[in-house]
Image (cartoon, rainbow, N blue to C red; front, side, top):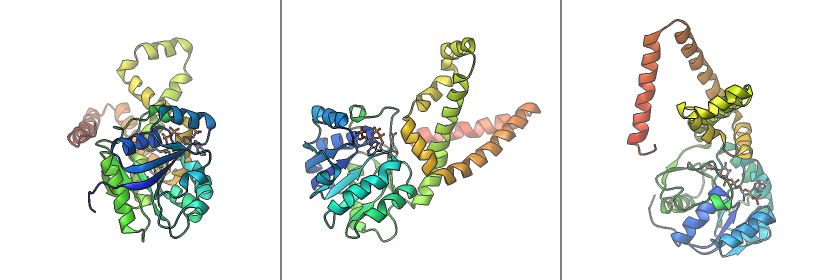
Length: 296
Ligand code: NAP
């Protein structure tokens, strides 16, 4: 793959929240396009995008937004991918590159592909970068810097289109990796989806406690709980979609996690200090690896 900075005549952004809004700012700051059109579902969001002023035109519908675009980036909740593809499909010019940013890949491919004309190049992608905030105000142009972006093009996807999308993400400061959609979904199940599920569960458990204990949990939250609350404050709609759309991989990884948790439970019950220390030493090494890889 080359690392040349791409240049587009017209980019259409369908969905302009944290991810689409961040990419819009990158496209502007890196001068990746002559013209950027945005479309978002609600009039309120569209008005806010106009006020923020980081795109040239805000369209009133998705079909108008994609007309004559050479790149279309879809950044909507995974469950909305099919309806968006259905709306834009008939209006895409031959040769247009369509990419997305969904956190689950196989489900997005299954949902979008049937609606995209065969002369359109679909390069599914997932920038592994985010915050717990949503909406166009939450975006910023450094969001993707130093983060990985995974592309999962189905076999036979046009190599030039893949390279152009990869270079767009490199221009945003990302490192790019290519893998199959099922592999992506399995890797992300353990690195992202299960950690979020645990955070939702721990914070959910606290939410059920009696009021007095709850007050103390908040007071002493720096003991570890606080870090989980940041993750558990992530967008409910997006995470609902992720667990439903990546069900198989999540259940597979959750099964392994439950077995390991049972082993820890047993070690505590039987005062198996060696087993606990061995486990915690291993996990500390993983933290060091993440710091070394500059992903901390
Ligand atoms: P966001 O800030 O909530 O923005 C979502 C965008 O999608 C908005 O433009 C919203 O439009 C639109 N939208 C919401 N529901 C829709 C529907 N049913 N039909 C059509 N459009 C709809 O979300 P985001 O964080 O940018 O996430 C966008 C995508 O990126 C998701 O697929 C997510 O899985 C993925 N992603 C997220 C992160 C993260 O950490 N947030 C990281 C990597 C990838 P209105 O505001 O007009 O309703």
